[in-house]
Length: 85
Image (tube, rainbow, N blue to C red):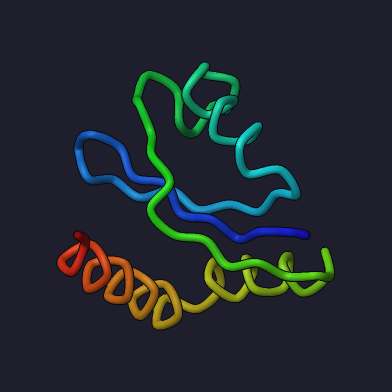
């Protein structure tokens, strides 16, 4: 499986990416191995799973290219976090 994921840090900043190993990637972000996410602790707040790497990469690119797609995804995340148990 391939994943498009969204992380959130303690300052409520969001970061998104694409990977085939969510657990490993989260560890890398929290160990400072990614320039964009250094010096913060991150938690996984959302992901989408795809069977095809091409589909996951296309989805990530769509989010990057279309601000409306990113805005809708942020709303979805905010709504789901409001309804956490």
